[in-house]
Length: 463
Image 1 (tube, rainbow, N blue to C red):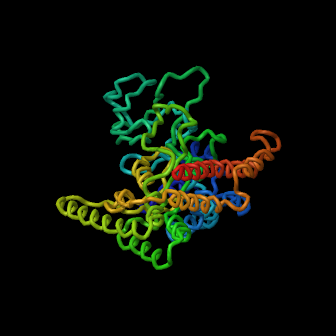
Image 2 (image 1 turned 180 degrees about the vertical axis):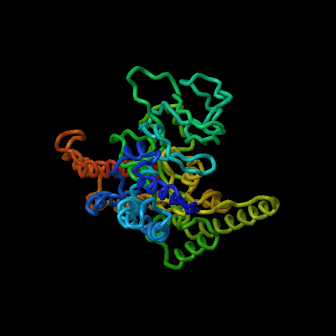
Image 3 (image 1 turned 120 degrees about the horizontal axis):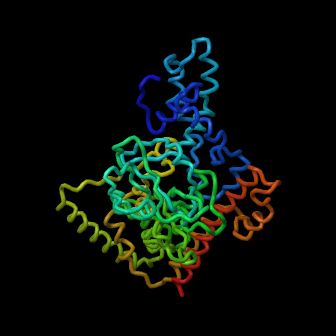
C-alpha cells in the first residue's frame, strides 16, 4: 500500500481495511477473530437510538462525522490502483467488499474499542492484550511497554506504580517507547485460581462505556457515573427564573459574556456521590472526583440570585480581581496558555481502549475548556448573597430542566419499570435489541440518580 499521511485514525483504519483485503495477510488470524458486528450506538437503528433520549451520550455518537470523514478522506483514495493487490479486473469487487463505508465504520469502531495509545499519541492494535475485559473496581492487570532493566522492582503480581512515568494509580498508563519487540501485560496483585483478569479502560461512566464499547455496568455498580449539563442551559434557565427586570437580567448576561466569567459553550460535569460505594480500590482511586455541586454552576447561579444592590457590589469586586489577575499574568512573560479544543470527530480525536486520557479528564473536571480564567475562578466567591433560598431555587430549576430532557416519562421509577419487563440477559428471550434497550435505560438511570442528588443538595443550601 502506498505511504499516506492521513488525519486521526484514518491511516490505521485504511491499513486495516487493506490488510483485510489480502487473503494471505500476516495479520489474517487476528483480523478473522475481530468482531464482525458491534453493539456501540453508531450501529443502532433510529428506534434503538430513541431509547437514549436525554442521555449525555446523544451528542457524542458522531454518526454524521464518521460519514463525512469517509467521504472526504477515504473515498478520494479509492481510485488509486496502488491501493489494491489484485488485477485491474478485480478492483471494483475488492473496493466494494473491503473498502466500503460499512468496513470503514466497523474498523474505526474496533479501533475505538480495542486500541492502545502511547505517550506520543500513536494508536495501535495489540493482539492478545485487547482480550481483557473491564469491570469497575476489579482491575488487576495492566499493559506495560518493555521494562528491560526491570525497573518495576517488584514481582509481576505487585508492580511498582512509580515506574509508570508519573501515572497515578487511577490514571490510564502512559505507555513507554518500547526498547524490545514486545509488550508486557502484568498483573497488579496476586490472582486467585479461576479469577478473571481485568484490564482498565479508565474511570468511565456508563454513557462512555456504552458509546465506546457497547455495554454498561450492572445497575448501580458504576461509581464513575456522571452527567453533563451545558453552561448555556444554566445561563438561560437562571436568567429566565431569577425574577429580575429584563434590563437587569440583560446587563448581567452581558457582564458574564464581556468578562469571560463563563464559557457558554462549556459542558459542566457532575459526578456520582462516592459514599454508597465505600472505600476506593487503590488501583482505581480518583482523588479529584467529588459528587455534588461544583464551583462553576454555583457561581453562575449566584450571579442571577444576587439582588441588584448585591450584584453592583459584586461587579466592582470582580472587575478589581480581574485587573489584579491580569497584572500578575503580565509579570510572567514566559507563560503560555494551552487552551486548544480538540476536534471531537468520532474517529479522529477519540481515544482507544487504554489511551492516556489525563488531559481530557482534567478538562472535564475543570469545566471542559482547560484552565480557569482568573475572574471566573474567583467570581463566585466575590458575590455576596443574603437570599440562599433564591440560589437554591435557581439551581433546582436548572437540574429540573436537565431532567426534563429525558422526556415526560423520564423518571427513575419509570425506567426501572421498563427494565423489569425486559428479558434477563443470557436468557432465550434476550436479543441484541433488548440488550441495547437495557443498556440505554441503565445509562439514563445513572445520570438521573445524580440529578436527583443535585436537586437534594441544592435544597439543603436553603435549609
